[in-house]
Every structure is written in C-alpha cells, then in structure tokens.
Length: 176
Image (cartoon, rainbow, N blue to C red; front, side, top):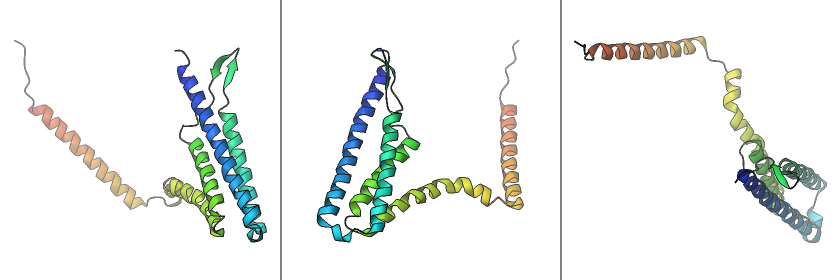
C-alpha cells in the first residue's frame, strides 16, 4: 500500500497527458487541413502569424506539462510521481490557455474575430488582480479609515462590556 497515492497521481497524469496530446493533434490537424484544402485564399499573413505564435506557445505549455508530470523511477520503484496535473493554481491556468487556444483555432476557421478570444486571458487576470492592486492605487482616505477604526473599536468595547456583565451575573458557588 505504500506509495499508492503516488501511483494514482502518476496514472492520472499519464491519462491526462495522453488526452491532451491527442486533443492538440486533432485540433491542429483539423485547422491545417481546412485551411490548406478549403480556405487557402482566405488565409492572411497576420492570421498565419497568429496561428503560428499561439501554436508555439501551446506546444511549449504541453511540453512543460510533460516535464512536470514525468515520474521518476529507481530500480523499477516509483520514487516521485511528478507534479499533480489536476492541482489548482498555475497548472489549471495553463490548461485553460490550451483550451482557449483550441477554441480560438477552431472558431477562426469561421471568423477572423475568433482571435479576440485570447483577450479573455488578460481580462481574467485583471479581474483577479484588481482587488489586490486597488489597495495600492487607491489608498483609503484618513477620515474613512479612522471612522472604520472607531466603529470597530466601539464594537469590540461593547462586546467586552457585555461579556463582563454576563460574568458578573453568573451564580457563584462557594464550598463550605
């Protein structure tokens, strides 16, 4: 039973990487076949560069996933399962990038405006970081912060007084 969790993570990573590689191959194959065979005249230089740039980034991200999730064995025994690809954080954001790339590639076969889908990424980053940045860009005014502090102090003082009053009203038993 030892190392069961590491084996489970390793198997999960292998399945996820296989699905990711097949998905990337399928989406990029469909894009290239449709562009070359059916829409050759509509492919502009700008669109070709957008496709190339986003595909290069997508391939780098997928290669990064492969190196992150690479299990290490020592004498046939699993030593390290690699990073868990189902974890949250940067890993999930990179998966989101890959999925947005696939969607943009497929939608760009129908419209050139599909490339604007990539604007979702910085928009989400701005939405996520705005509360943290706002406190530095827009500091609280002195009267607002002092009023909030005064109200908080008054609430604490009221709770303290009520607690002391309850303690005074408690029945005290004396041993005889």
